[in-house]
Length: 461
Ligand code: BGC
Image (cartoon, rainbow, N blue to C red; front, side, top):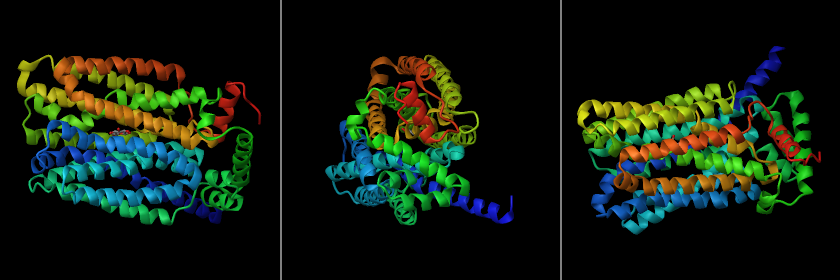
């Protein structure tokens, strides 16, 4: 290969990585905003004299906002473009972060957290979609999962900020600091392009060709443009939008996507991400030790996500999902067992911490990145926005249910039974993935779609 060609190629991959990194700031905001509240809440509840119920409302206002953001985000991004939606999301992030930092009443705080949720939900949907549509197939897994990596970084940064500001009780700063990455996201997106797939679906072929020219090797540009156009034209002849979602050939993938989204949440990851300090506290660890250990959990989460980035495009999505979920089931079952041994005091705290970390590690290399990745790549172009929307809504609603029920389940059933219930759900989820989820590694989004059409007897190319 001549030097000029390889220099051009290097420039292109740098560009693709920059695109992924900037848009993944949306993931960082997602992580920060869910991670920060556990620490901030300890102070807010005193300042605003919040009842336990109102504390729950403050936490879940963001999750309900996120489900709403996912509901409207898909359609808007199909209509106005992925890029524009992310710019709007950045502005909403800024308003929500500053608004929650300046809240003078519980009502204002709940409203600001809801607004923030709209941006979290919109970004959680559109960032993976945006990256998936811009990335070359060979590295799509790693690039889309950069978003999940940034989610875990956001959670870790939030835990660290909580730790650092806790002694000042500075909850307003904890919440308002999220405006910083939001500004970076907004400004960064102004310089990034729209995706070729969205451009083609809006007949902007020259622009699509030029974006492909910046992200693909010379000889791939025309082929890929043809491939996108042919799928696009085929879809044009068919119904579109939400109506399309109920068509028989889309249905199997709809079940897979929504199923995966529910599985990511119902297997219990956020019982740990939101409540780890109180869980550890229960085992006899002191409050500050518990908060400190939470930072350790955040670090494991980040590190194992890096492992996933390296493996998703090599071993494939399915093996990682199946292995990770199996590990989660075993760890959570053992965690349940630990809570049966209340007499072991100190040691029991560390055993619990160990299994919690093992559980988070297994999630981080499988369901964490894998689910967001797969729901961004298994849907046909025309319905991609709305179908991903549906999966993402399901994900956030399940998130709300877990967040609202977990503590009362522990009260009613005890920790052991609760964790064993999660282990049982994990086994069912494993069976679902084993039988229904296809492999998508290394194939273009159009190839995946063409295969799905054939499988369901709708070739029509
Ligand atoms: C999930 C979040 C979770 C986070 C933990 C994300 O993929 O959607 O609910 O808190 O991973 O890293």
